[in-house]
Amino acid sequence: MNDFLSLVEIMSRLRGVGGCEWDRAQTHATLRQYLLEEAHEVVDAISRKNMVLLCEELGDLLLQILFHAQIASEKGEFTITDVIESISEKMVRRHPHVFSDARAATPEAVSLQWEQIKKTMENRNHVSLVGGVPRSFPSLLRAAKITKKAARAGFDWENTGQVLKKVGEEMEELKEAISGGDPDKMEHELGDVLFALVNLARFLNIHPEVAMVAANERFERRFEAMEKIAEESGCSIDQADLITLDRFWEKAKKMTE
Image 1: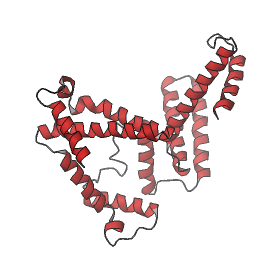
Image 2: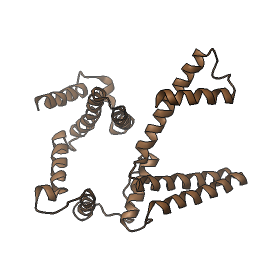
Image 3: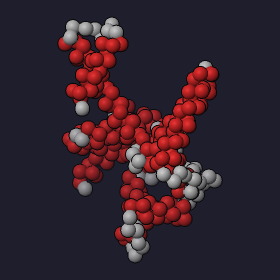
Image 4: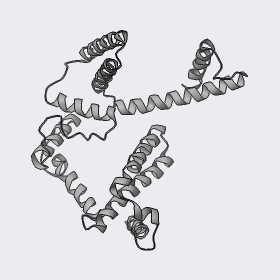
């Protein structure tokens, strides 16, 4: 606890008279990008299974939280103590099966109970049942949240096969749009394909944002390996033909599996 209080004091000093001019100039709005960056770096550390890096990145994320709390404190809006008290009270309220005599024997039951508590006790009702998902979320994450809400309202398929069929239907519509050559139509249909794939991910219990992050990292890792293979072969990768590149790619895949 002393270490945490020391960190709070450090942030206060950085923002105070004689502190850091850059820190003093920041606002909630200017810090938004750094909060997002730090959150993504935490996710990256988890994906890498690097616990040393994860510890460091969690610290960076915590610093952003303290930064926002300090700015609010200076305006008399709330303090970091208020933040902690709020989340502590919320966790107890949302877990009556732990802190009270309610029952929730499965993760699914806990999730349903969580949503009911948010609606009835936290004034989170929205005009739409799929409302309340921040528009600032990454698109795949937002789609996953929206489709999950729709499913809870009963608007859903019955099995994975039906979702796969829907993905196929959307792919056919995309092919037609490509044949037509209308950029707006192609964008529209491509969006529908991605949205259908998000639903498929939900049925497979795979988070699409996490899967996409892993795919990006996998491609980057393999491409870098391919560049190394090309260099060792005395070939410039930007001048090699497609057949040669494909051969390098297959070797890179085997190296990075």
